[in-house]
Length: 358
Image 1 (cartoon, rainbow, N blue to C red):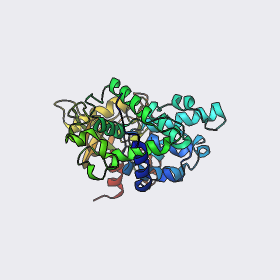
Image 2 (tube, rainbow, N blue to C red):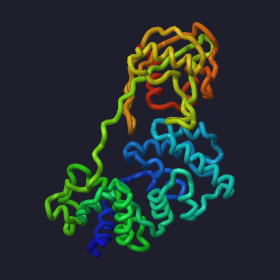
Image 3 (cartoon, one colour):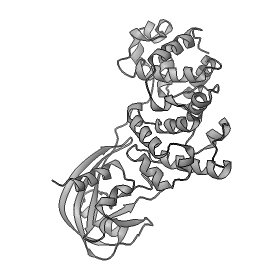
Image 4 (cartoon, rainbow, N blue to C red):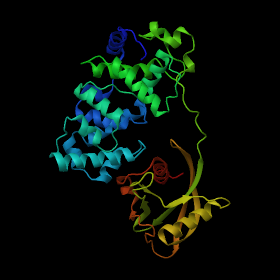
């Protein structure tokens, strides 16, 4: 086991008390608020999550308000934050708490980890921060701190390394001070021990940091090289009926962005024009033949595992009536009501273009 200075936790907690960032979930660290914040912070930076958390709390200020909401309301409240499976897991968890525990959130670590979307890290964060139970967290920031402090040359993307690091941070955790220690470690990684340009000169635990002493900081942590993400080209038809409004379809709940609404269309195939792509997709999905009109615009968006280039066109139906051929829901909705439904970021860009025509 790697040895660490007994003063590590004292210096870390002392530093954290003076340098902790002002985050809305820290002001009232209730079980409900910490749960929501930790789910939001899964694969999302604090700066991005903060405004979404504030909006969420306005819509669902308490667990009681959340458990009485439907899934579409939850997805709408999550809109723009991405990784929508997180929102669906929150909804599923709320229903479990409602149906199995009379709407009261059990303060039991085993139950908390059993909820959809909660693994060992999220359980440790929720239990330590809201309940001050002695669980040590291990996220990307903490792994970077450990790798540099101890010069751990094992690949942190491997589960065996993560298990090894968990054993180290478990030993380092000062009993009864889990909240301060865990938040301090995560804050240290976010503000000081950053991936690039770490601020070693003001690090509270620099004196015993092995990578600083050996002047080899940026060699750690060891991790897999990132692969180039695929780029997708998709087309969307914006069909308007003078009386009923715009035609939108709901994505299959078992697919990415499931449950969200979109303007119908799909991915362009090899050697296919974007207009042929849209025509084909509308025939396959809704059994309608369309005429494609003027182009609205081209929109770009970067997801975690791919990038998208969406071409949106005005279109009108020339044959058939919309029929769900793949089991998805569809509806007509007027522009004044269109934002009542939840959409992905790229479809929101289409809506903005419709609301503000050039």
